[in-house]
Amino acid sequence: MVQRPIRQLQLLLQRKEIMKHVVSGVTDRTQLVNYVGDSRSTVYRALDDLAEEGLLVEKRGNYSPTPLAEILFEEVIDLHEMSTTVNKAEAIIQSMDGEDLVPHLFQDASVTLPTRYAPNKPFSAVSEFASGKSTLRVLIPGFIPQVITALSDHMAEAEVEVVVEEDSLATLERKSAVRAELGPLIERKGIRTTSSEIPFILLVTDRSSPSTCLVGYDNGRILGTIETTAPKAYQWATDLYMSHHSSSTLVGPEAVKMT
Image (tube, rainbow, N blue to C red; front, top):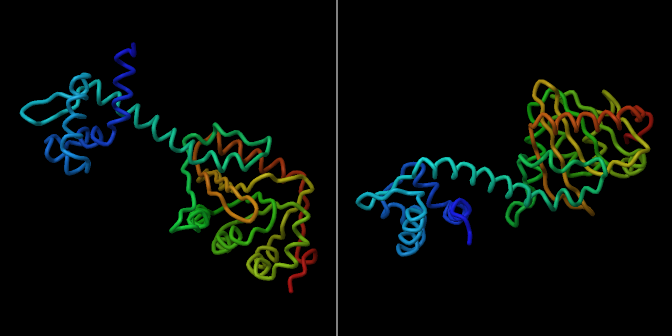
């Protein structure tokens, strides 16, 4: 037999939409029908179930959460949001087969995925991530046009450093559009290349505004972005970036055919 605390948690998760409105102050059951959008009988039955489990108190057709319900509901919502984030990020994380990746560091992250009507949404997320930053460190396998375009608008306003796999230099020479966008950065600071494999795209900001962004990219398409300001994720990202940086070589305009 399922114990009552477990039943209460299950019910809160099943009826989280109704509970969200009750906790926020919508107490009248007729109003709740309008807010939730389910049938009257469905909402009334859910309210009865929540009251029977000791999660709501009913008085003349008005409902209020019990103290226990308020505490449990907050925990349920936090757990549900974490689960949703992990599920959304799973496809992105699975595409990043690098042994250095530590998935649990991103359980509280913000995930942006492309949608049917907004396929470029992750590129906008990359651009927003870079916007207004004073320092930006970029670890990237190759010169991926969409990502470079998303970053290029902010390269003039930020102190940018890029570490890329050395094989990408030959590719850059064939991509005039990408070369043009990277031109100012190459002229000003050059680009660092490494012989080691870079398994995913990583963006790290400065310590005054610590944040980390992973970009999933596979076979010519972007899978999404995972962003976090968690200190442990930031430290992991900084350490990973520096490990590639320490073995990289700085190359200037003379190493790249700029025209």
